Amino acid sequence: MAYKDKYSNDLGLTLGMLTLRIWLGCRAILTGIEKYAGTQNSDKDVLIDGATNAYGLTDTVTGKVYSFSNYHGVPVPLYDKFNSEPLIPTWGLNLFDTILGPALILLGLGVLFGIAQRISLFAMGLVYTSLTFGLILINQSSGVAWLGVHIIMVVMALALAKHNRFAVLKKW
Amino acid sequence: MNLKLPTLSRRDFLAKSTLGAGLVLGAPAVLRAKEAGAPTDDIRVGFIGCGKQHEVLFNAMVNIPGIRYVAACDIMKARVGRTFSTIKSRFDTKINRYLDAEEMLEKEELDAVFVSTPDFWHAPHTIMALEAGCDVYCEKMMSNTLEGARSMVAAMDRTGKLCQIGHQRRSNPRYRYTLEQLIQKEQICGQIVNINGQWNRALSSSQDIVSKPSILPDAETLRKAGFNTGADHELSLDELRHRFLNWRFYTDLSGGPISDLGAHQIDIFNWYLGCQPTSLMASGGRSYFKDREHFDNVMCIFDYDTPQGHVRASYQVLTTTSAGGGYYESFMGAEGTIIISEREAYTKIYKESGADSAKWDNMVRRGFLKKEAAGKAAGGADAIASYESAPPDEYALPGGLSKAPHQPHIENFLDTIRGNAKLTCDARHALESEAPIYWVNQAAESKETIFFTDEHLHT
Image 1 (cartoon, each protein chain N blue to C red):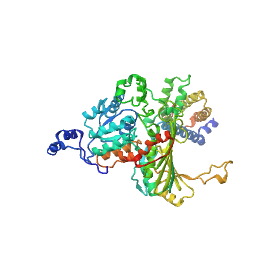
Image 2 (image 1 turned 180 degrees about the vertical axis):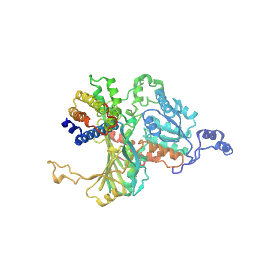
Image 3 (image 1 turned 60 degrees about the vertical axis):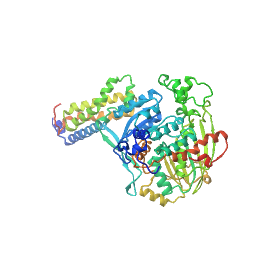
Image 4 (image 1 turned 90 degrees about the vertical axis):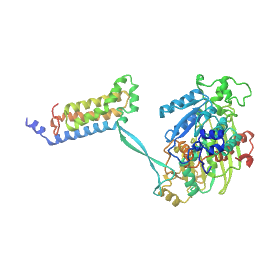
């Protein structure tokens, strides 16, 4: 009992859990947001001797912008590969493509702020597992390994869930 | 064409012709000419020819304000219908459709007409439109014959109307900047000694054009439109339709690849050097497309006497290969070389190792040029030191064009109609530049050097 209490109150484990929450939360939120990213070109006048040139020569500046119209849940090259896989139905792929971005953002917020911590972490694990499923089929071993690291971190966070502090909703 | 006189509309022009000058002078209402420099007035535009080149022009016009699309004509009904639908969906405007240019010019009140018909129709359509009181933008080549082109200049002079020829590079800011700032003012090339230009086009882009027979004009329409010109026998419907779709292959209908593609670039040689060539040698052949009337591959060399010295300019148009850098014009001087193209990707500037580095660095600092890379020797075990030259540094233009390549040329035409600009390529200047090109096929056929005289080149 004394042993258990010692670990329940261990500051290191609490901070470890918090670190995992921050990492996994930020990772999921930013990955979700990036699915709305795109580029926008704008033209600016070329300056010669400090003044705008008289010919109308312009320099194209490419900037990064976010908008709903840029959204691609599954990047186009991967989408095409998944779409040609017999084990991935098109309707399922389209559904996944639609919900992946918002799901990552919502789950990321859930993990970061500690909202139903275990359920949020488990759901996040399922999302990463579903991504792994597709990558196995198209033989992207490095991507599978990369997602495997995410799964290990999710499992670590679940194992440390009893040390969770600073959570909005501790239940579930 | 330095001065753009106030223009009368077509209706007023006809009224003037009918009623006589005296009556016109006494009737102010008839003198409702569009005042030069009235930018709020929309320019009423009509199209003669609605094929591929028309589409290029139209796509370059859609972002230009102040245009009212009024009418279009083509002998192929489906093409006029497509133009109608495009304008309707883009501008919610219903234009009037015609199958006959003369009828369109007679019935419509137009300020400007865009001619993009086959080359052998350029002169008749342009002259018709000029005489109907319209300003004209006509695609290059001006005509399939030198006489046709000269008649266009005469019509422009006679009517006092504007006639812009579609050498669109003349209005391109990149080309103008390169000539005026880099070559003339800063003289970064030093003495230009050689010029080389090319348009290398793959076989896949040089094939016969085909179309659904059901939408093509019938034999009578095609004969009436002159597509049987020069034929030595009664042409079948299929032969007529082949000529209609592939008029660029026939000697009586066009000038062939040297005119279709080469004209744009040889025009740049003459414009940049500010003079006409003194002689021409050429070689050409039906080397791959043996059934075509025109040469499929042509190479030629022009000689120029410029105030800076003698210049040789070689040009090649190849329709059987795309390798070798696409299409560009290269001005090679003792201090630097400018390779310029309508495509930014093909444009490069090189500084010779012996040129004044301080001058070039200063130009980069001031924004005239961008430095891309220091010269790098190719190296390798097979390099023989005594054969090698020091590699030139690579530079780039300071900026590009953020519009469709044809848009500035059309803008220049419309601005000149409004009295706010001067044509960058009126028919006279275009002919001065095009005249030597009309002799290339003949020089290749005869395999003899042509030494140009006023007889060859006068406008």
